[in-house]
View (tube, rainbow, N blue to C red):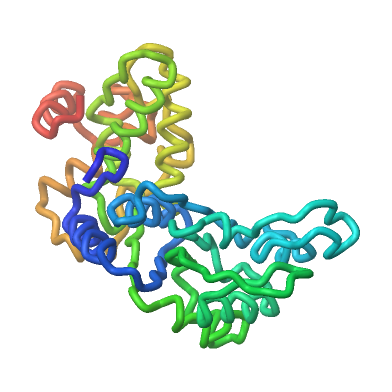
Length: 311
């Protein structure tokens, strides 16, 4: 995989293999996952790995489409179709040609627009507003949705028939908390990208910061990690990324969650390392205060930090 798609964990390597296989098939794909998990990156990778890679990749942000403009944006219009239609305009499906159409956050589309989208998906044809003929839709359709899309179907806010038409090939993007092996590689990638934009060398990440990043649950997923790293990069100002460059929310969060601990069956060393790392985060790296809270001497704390790589 190119560097733009970081996949070090087992679950993400399995997803990469699915993307590779699905890229060779022209059927519709539905990508599901939590907000910020990386669905857009998966969609772009799916397009980039297929035969359509050099053709348009047209993104339709379903959440931001104004209700009054949905028909015009999706289908296009002929001149005079409505008051402001002073010239003919191709819709997004036409503009995609034989490339890919990516329906981002498809569950945000109003229910009446879902019916119109269903006709396009089923008939593979689109008719401009005010037009008298239809045009074949040659683009591949990729859609993304929140992990709770099945609840939306059961609740009647998303059409079940459209759901099944889009979900010919399903891809599920796991949340970042389920792939901790990806956290540091992603953090380094975002640092490298931020530094490259300013033509600077990427700063190092200290070991206690690395531990803090690994042990955080990342409720905002990859998007939250990216924003965290970008803020830390700005605060570091040519130096290494330190604990005091991280947000208070991250530093004050529990070192680990009980269900994650049970699932991973940590050793006593793992538990001690995480507890020491959490204590150091809590006191913003103050060695004397950390030793006091841990009930050990500063020398013992130094030895444990060295042992666990918490420099």
